[in-house]
Length: 429
Image 1 (tube, rainbow, N blue to C red):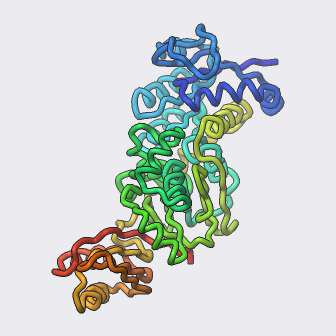
Image 2 (spheres, rainbow, N blue to C red; image 1 turned 90 degrees about the vertical axis):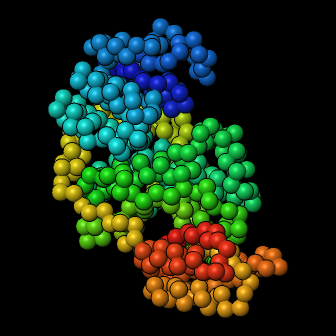
């Protein structure tokens, strides 16, 4: 039985998941790829650090050169996260003629072109299934199963932390901070949750999927991004009363070779499949011009689901006779498509205002919206105090530019205290 040696860069939750899968499913993996996979080196910061799995100390190292100089190591698996030194280690491994597997969405979204180019130049494989959707095989679906399609739309819940928080706020009436603390206690959120709750993580993943799906390079700075930290319990209640659920969605659309790319909290009909994706689960809704609508669903994070995607990539490398990274390079070398400004995006809107309880204020606001080509679908009024009321408007679909102009004018009205929140609405019509 031929043995293939690999190395892990980093040994956190995902690295330990990879270790567990390779040992627990050893016989099945040999059956699937005809070879035994051995982890011969693991790069760590501290060899003496206590770990949840029992690993021989002689395979732990703090020196990347121990891995790069070992000609018997065929595959390097980067699981450190962050931009550097992860990026430099992957490039060095490729230049040492080692295949590379990663789960690093930040590097892929911002520096992927250099990695793809280096892999091609060095004649090595570069796989990254675990970078998006954890255990959901979205990259393989786009690169292989859906290649007969022109992908027109991607809509996904691709961050488990924010989905867990919104689920707790919806199902159990928690406020945002309470739900965030629960996510941190369960290990779904980091001590600094900014990347998740402010939408950066989802934007990185959208950039990767959009680049593959729409065949163009994606500039991260062109993706509109908004997090969930401004969502309040009252917004959840209003959404429910209107027949909507609130989810953090990553949305990518190819409309006549112009791309619409955005990440933000979104009200969606409770009858839509994505509305019923709860807790830390992820789901990605895809529309192809041949296949129609399909949805992939599963655990979007966690040591074993993500580790499963990593090991799947390792097995693919060992079984592969084709450099699939070349397909990615071909896509990224295509002519760039224009990403439209957020002002050009079209959707419905939920607008919640705090206003003085004065005669005619509703008419003033409706007049402003009308002047900016925004049609009101419904309006709800609730008394907040003796002098103030809460006004909630649901609009028909309109340009975001119209909404922004309307809100600027509304904010200047004497009887408007504050614009409390604005949430986009997707009806998937």
